[in-house]
Image (cartoon, rainbow, N blue to C red; front, side, top):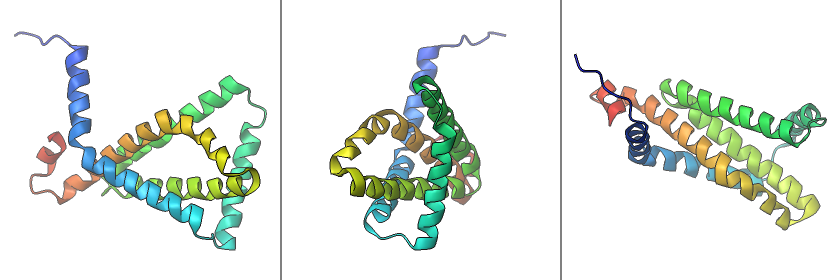
Length: 164
């Protein structure tokens, strides 16, 4: 029996092709994210929701207050890794978790953006740019793939659709 030799380049290309074939699901996630970011930015938040979000943000700030730059990078990386992992894996349940995660994260981004802009001005949004280069695409890909996994239940050839 001949064993197959692992080829990193071949596996990387297969993974890249799978992501390319899943682009419509990734585009759906991106669209939902920015739609809810705009809602969070432009539509006034009800007081009860605003209070909860501000409380959440305050707790997050307290948790990260004493961290140096390296610890903060680690914290953000692990948080994004966890979010991406659960978005991908729990997507198998009809894609509900990736959609909810996308909605919540988009809305929070819009909510926080308008709060910061109202205090520091529109140019403060440029600070988000580095996050948009690395973090958001990784999260969009994992949530898009989670959405794809959740859609397999609606396909005629259920498990074959995951291979496509």
